[in-house]
Length: 400
Image 1 (tube, one colour):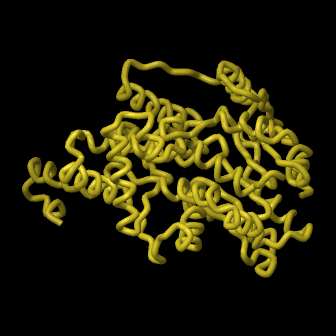
Image 2 (cartoon, rainbow, N blue to C red):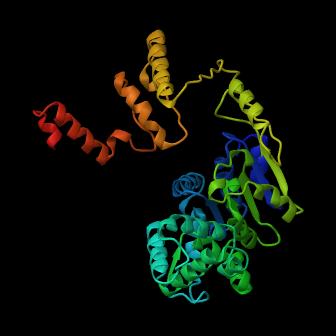
Image 3 (cartoon, rainbow, N blue to C red):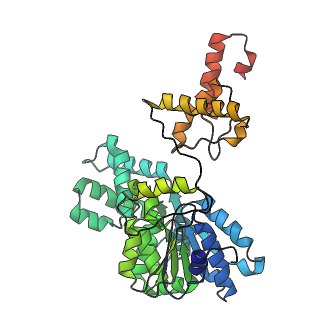
């Protein structure tokens, strides 16, 4: 706690009101969550009554690892740190009888979902086009994320797709199966229709912490509201300026909705950035100012003003990759630094290929962090091996 800044300390100690921590990038939000879990336990709330929810298994593992450094094994026993979907699956498996499921619920992946939809189209859903099955699957997922049941869809939407949604839901139930989106939708319906079950889970989870709240959809928002209860026993951490998943149903408006649903909501802003220099944050603040958002914030840093920023424009992505690598090679030669002192950040994994190609052409050693090199994929290696043999039939290694 001693190393937390005043805003972080306030967020950790605020337990009497529902709390929204508006956390800018690099502001130490994960540390606030982990420190708050430790604080709650030390204040007398057993870890088994605390749940922390995030969006990826990796983030959940990291969070639990950090908490384990703040509490001993006895104190941490029973702590629930998971993704939304893991929490939903746990609820379904424990309450399967109430939902009229058998104990061994099967979880359908995306391929299972498509296979079932194709079967339904081939054996009854004649108004649906088999070539559009991917679109139907996406549509059904969007309905579930928007908290639209098959019954509601039949009343308000395209009848053919809504009927397919209804048939799909019935078939899942017959198979004693659920899909990924059901892991949130079904617990919400369960809690709404069975108050006694909701009360049991509210007693289990007496304090709820949610990370990356700007990425929640309507159904996830409803799940948080139900578990937190009317008293709002929660801390949610988010930033509407960091929402990037609207395409899959995320609603950054959920942050503002909290103020409407919880009159006692406390908002604490984390604006000190520990990752970037002042010059970078100045530019970021100017860009973010153009975003539509419900909460104003201005990031700042104690890391100094920093070096000037350069923006390079290119006619295509190939030229961009070549220029980036050229800049690195030139700067290394001029300063006598090492290649390990440089990093290339890109938006999506699919963008790595051109940078890798340019790095290889310039004999620059590199490694890919958090993903797989384009040239390491087995199918790419096979094609390259064939090409090597075309050029050199004596290349025995290419046969391996």
